[in-house]
Length: 400
Image (cartoon, rainbow, N blue to C red; front, top):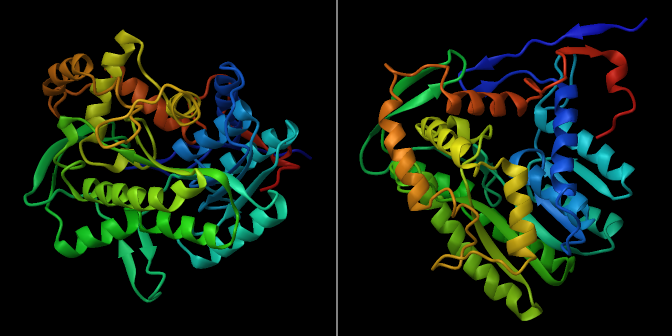
C-alpha cells in the first residue's frame, strides 16, 4: 500500500528545519532550464566544486554541465535522510543534480564529507584519477562554514563569527520565523575570534586544495580556480566588509595572488569573484543583511535587474571566466556585482532603507515577499505546482 506524508514547513529564527524533496526537484529543473535557455558555451570539461550542494556552488555545477557539457565532482557536507527526518536540502540537491546530469550523459559524482579534512582531499584525488580522466580543469571554491579543524593540530577547532571590529553595531534584521524586523546589537570581535574566522573563511584551505591537487598531478594545463567572495554595499559595511568576514575575504585575496604565481607557468589562473547579494542559507544569518536585501529586491523589481544565484553564476562563467567580457576592479577581482553596486541602484536602496524599521515593517512589502519566497524555495517550499505531500514512491530509485 502506498503511503503519503504531509510535509510541514518549519523555520526557527532564520534557519529552515524541514524540506520538500519534490519542491527541490522542481527547482532543479527550473534552474537547468535557466541555463539551457542561454545556449551552449565553450567552458570547463571536468570540474570540482567544493560546496556544490546549494547556492553558488550548485549554480556552478548547473552551468558547467548544462551550459558547457562538463562532468562534475561535488563535495558537500549535508544531513542525509534518517528515520523520520528527510535530511537537508543540500542532500536532495546533490541527488537530483546527479539524476539529471546522468540522464543527459554526464558524469556527476557526489561526496558527502568535510571539505576541510585531509582525508577528503585524498578521496577527491582518487575520484579524479578514477572517474575524471586523471585531471580537472576548474576548481570552484564555494564554502561558507561555521568551523574548521586545524589540519596540523586536530584538537584545535577554529569557529567563525560574524561580528564587527572595534565597536558594536546595531541594525535591524529580519526574523523569518516570526515575520518581523528586530533590532540587533552585535558586539565587536576579539582578536582570537578574528583570527579563527580568517582560518575558516579565508583562503588557507583553498590554497591547501590547489597544492594537494597539483602535487597529485591532477590539474590539467590551463587549469583555473575561482573563489566566491562578497564585498557588499556601504549599508552593510560595518558588519561585513569592515568586520570579521571582510578581513577573511582580504586574506582570500592574498591567497589568490599566491596561487596565481603558482599556476601562471602552466597557463593557469586563480580568480576571485565578488558576487552580488542573494538569498542563501548563509546570508540570512548575517545581521542587517536581510533588511538590505528587502530594499535591494524592491528596487530591482522596478528596474528588472534581479538575479538569483544560477543566473549570476551562469553569466559569470559564460561572460567573464570563459568569455571575453570580464568586469574587473582595480584589484583584479571579477565583479558580477557591478550592477547591484552601481550609484543609481544604491541611491534608491538608501532611500528605502530608513523606511524599513521594526516599527514600520509590514509583510506586504514587495521586497520582503520576494526574499521570503526565495528563502522558502531553498528548501522546496512555495514552489508553484508542488504540494506539501510526499508519497513513498516519490523517492524510489534515487541515489546519492
